[in-house]
Image 1 (cartoon, rainbow, N blue to C red):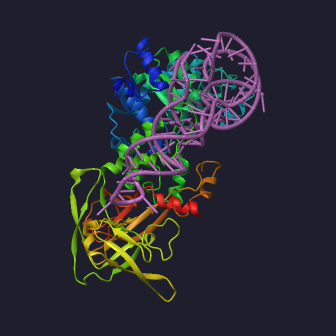
Image 2: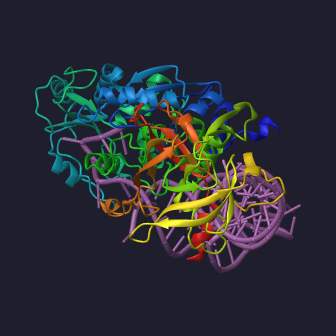
Image 3: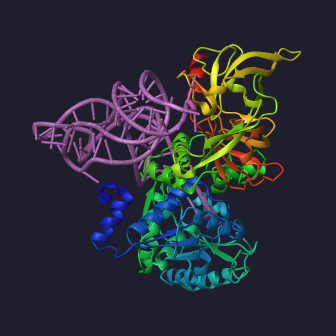
Length: 557
RNA sequence: UGGGGCAUGGUGCAAUGGCAGCACACCAGCCUUUGGAGCUGUGGAUCUUGGUUCGAAUCCAGGUGCCCCAGCCA
């Protein structure tokens, strides 16, 4: 492999390389601009990795800057959560800053604009401002306060800052062009008056707070950010992004926009995620069904898998919805290499091996990970009464069913061949016990006479099994794109996205720690949940194993 | 009917005037003490109409479709 060729390339990396080559910038500095008003989700990872990797690949640096320009929405709690999640991904930054660190300097820059006659205080009501903005097809009208003289503007702005006016009574606006075809250029607001609540960092020092367009770009300039990489919806803001530093005569960063990540069968908007939590459709922000990083971590996804997914999804300007199946494939690929194999029966049915000695217990040798010879082996106890998966037995087998049914012989993994002889039913005709005989010459799972079986099934010894809770997760929504409509997404919630099972696991799993991951053979990858206790371990389904039989069965229907 | 963007297999991303390729998904087979993993193979795409060119996914012109913008949110 030529490392030069395997380097990922995309239109942003090309643009950055070009900027370096032609001298527009001498080095690269990017910024991570989360607003501390929610938890990070998989969509953020794409943006974060673009910023992080592009800086890193070019020997540049990344600044983590919290965009805290709206005290009504932001909280310190989220600052810590975001840093924690970003660190989990392995992202490194040279320093943490806040938009609020620059409030003083930004205010000075605003006064400069006022002095230049490029900004003014507008006394119009919110409704008037809206009415005079015009529409998508009609130009706006100038505010009656647009031509105030500089002294009055300076005085009013100072008094806004000092808290002399009530919320919403005035704003500072850039004086650009009310007839501009781009609505963002129709005298955009720079400062609004907000007295309460106090800001999470500056407290009650400020009575005015900068808008995104004013703060973000100027902060980029102040920090010497060369490339301000953001999502597509900011394309319309780029002319404004460039207008401010041009007027001010300060350093001009370059903004480049890319398509954000969307995923099938989930939602990504903060508003919708919050609604899921607040209305208890899920059990909190870290509910393993959520697309948040804390949820994915709790569910057992590895950072490596998440990162690989992001790498495979690529970077472009196409609006796109990536498939959850790709994310899951990345998780399986990573976990297949790392996970210790264990046996667990999630929907048990009892099997009695009639010709096996009543009190005998044998220790069977089992391989911990066939993908990793260094993982070693373990002993698994075997005895007369075992549990197998209900799915692994059929009284009347459908076509191509190779598992246990009356008269059929299968292999119990790492143990013996058994052949089903008969079943015992309850009053209602339900099979409650499967009876079988074993072949003592097949110990370990190999037949002495070269006889083959079509199927190997897993099991646990009934008397040695540990009962555990297993939380089985399925997609949160039944539709690939539940985003359509306002609250339409709630209408397609999957009622079966969580199923709680009581299962049995082999005794080696009796003592486990939160976060430990295993593959339950033939079922999937599982992770010990934080709700786990020594008495009652709790496992989360991380992702199921691919199931060829399920496919065959489905096709038959 | 303003402005800004985007159109390549089912999905996502490549191909930067020279044989349309990769991954996931799908399908078939091989192998298998996980119907897992692995291996092999098949099918399937350049929005449309014209133009330029020896040659167009790529350049030009027109059309069509989809996304974003009218917060004192970010």
